[in-house]
Length: 196
Image (cartoon, rainbow, N blue to C red; front, side, top):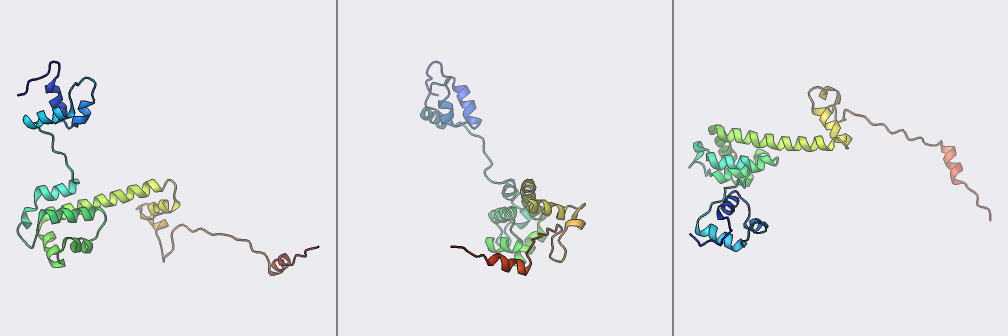
């Protein structure tokens, strides 16, 4: 243990540090008369711990945590490949893109999915996360953009029959009526005499 300066509450500093607060933030506190370096030295010497923070998405974490035991040691499977695949599904990639990105063939990918329910479930969750993000963006855009609103109407089960695209045409029709002059009026407009 260190010799403590009188008036420094190292127990409180340790609690803040272990709760995840940065040493420089603790140092800037008016009530703490100790430097960041001193905090870090003491933390190292006394082996203060910081909580582990999750730096990967929940879907990636699921792949790494479960390890998809059914697939371990088979067909070049690694939890890292599964995590990469799931992160690609979260941004909207399809199965072909995922297979190419992680470097496996179609048959191997199909076997992985058929043999591991956990992987299938994780893929569905990643795809659902992507769909949720996309729908949230459309919903936000619909407040100011009629195309986004039309998209919502065309996919909603209650309104899709009326607004879904049919024969390549959208459900909402916009007609522009441009009044054109008669040919003789156009000729008269071009024949302007300029007096000098």
